[in-house]
Image (cartoon, rainbow, N blue to C red; front, side):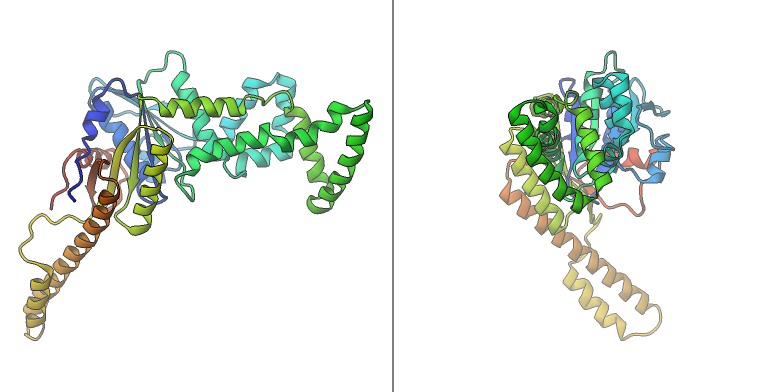
Amino acid sequence: MIPEALHVDDILDDPSISIIVCTGAGGVGKTTTAAALGLRAAQRGRHVCVLTIDPARRLAQAMGLTELDNTPRQVTQDTGDGSLHAMMLDMKRTFDEVVEAHADPERAAQILENPFYQALSSSFAGTQEYMAMEKLGQLHTQPDAPWDLIVVDTPPSRSALDFLDAPARLGSFLDGRFIRILTAPARGAGRGLGRLAAAGFGIFTGVLGKILGAQVLTDVGTFVAAIDTTFGGFRERADETFRLLQQDSTRFLVVAAPEPDAMREASYFVERLRSEDMPLGGLIVNRVQAIDVEIMTAETALAAAERLTHDAGDEVLTARLLELHADRLRIRERQQHITERFTGAHPGVAVAQVPALAGDVHDMTGLAEIGELLCTPAPG
């Protein structure tokens, strides 16, 4: 089945669309795609902020992001009537901003200095995904923001679904039963039931102390006491951003490579987006083998190469070139088969294919080329 063409420029040019989320499995080119989309949108007159998560160093330098910076900075690039800002998510700094915004200075300092909080904000599973959502919400509601389009590069998670699931998990942890258990003795102190609960809690913490160590448990307890009245809004903010992603002003672009694992992940995520009523823009397949001119089939090329191999002189070089041509044709056939399997399972999903380039993209010229290829049918 021939897939419906994804018209990326139509999405970029639509003024009603204010958020584009690029997601997919790790290593498929999400960051480069997000940056290229942001640049192309700016060149077409939009005012864009690209939220990147983990860009390659050369790509970050090309966009003027020479160090990790949690503040959007304007990229110095000729964008005509448009403009381009870019930033790299600093998840710990974003978490610190949440603390500072929702706690008084004394309590904020107590939380920020707590060893358990420092570990939670730096390496807790799901923190990066939650903070990407948190930062998106901040950028979207920033007063007098100089951008009208936000392009989001989702974190390089084990699963693309983590971007949607992890915020709820972290919110449940901070708002949920575990926190209530740890704060119950303090809230019930002085009452009969409180003393009884405290006695039970002492047994519970004694077991935890043997497992985790007394100092770790002390740090956890201090952290819990500090946030007990501070972080009631974690889940609410996650839910608010989740609803924002469901609006018609958002488009999800699923990014994949023409390989079985990446396309299976893309298929799973497309189904999840539909189940959550989130607006899917389409699928972008990166690194597609393109053949400008198909002068012969793979079988014909290999047969000719076999005949020439037995000859002497320059015929051997010609044979090698024919074998290379056959290899490229077979790669393309395999990639087309993989893409067609996806299309057969999801016939309503529009697809854009980006040809594989000879080298990595590491400057604005390369990003502009990717943006052009995103909006041009892949040859062959």
